[in-house]
Length: 233
Ligand code: ZN
Image 1 (cartoon, rainbow, N blue to C red):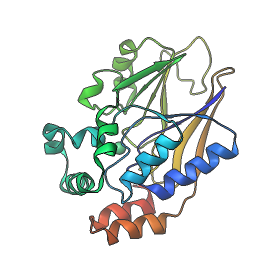
Image 2 (cartoon, rainbow, N blue to C red):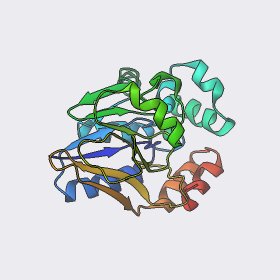
Image 3 (tube, rainbow, N blue to C red):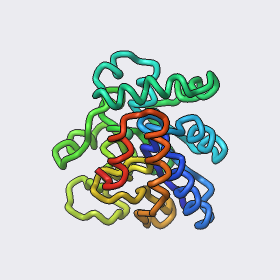
């Protein structure tokens, strides 16, 4: 069975819609979302609703939690804080309840799904290096762990350099970001995984960045949040 794993939507409805277009074209019915549905972008509520319509199995991200946890909000920079306070005013009670009820970790089949790191998921550590990955592998029991949070796609392998998934080894895969890629490629990023033969496809897809950027500016959110979509940084 093929599954799609998406992450870090950040209220970018144009990007999420484009991602679902790819997912539907490929006939994929099962979608996992690694959190950060909201924050930064101008359509947080619409993104929550779209994920619900597709029955996405979702874990919580730090921006989602920041709506309910002042300690997380305190650690955010000015732009991120502004976006969360704005988001708080936009969401319905039902949408907020949906975010508040999300789990930190999901485990299904060969896979663990978590926003930042399987090691202390509620600490929101950035898993960015081989060293970070070595510390995180003992924290989950499945062969595979899917993460987001850094907005930079990557594959970490336990005990090997090989970046192609194969049975018998363990991997941590960062799927990149739908709504705010930061690897200097402005196209949205996510992964498709075949749970039978373990083949993985890394999708990069164009979307209507101009519209997403304009909505951010029109909403009175920091202009920089729109500008960074253009160069993917
Ligand atoms: Zn994020």
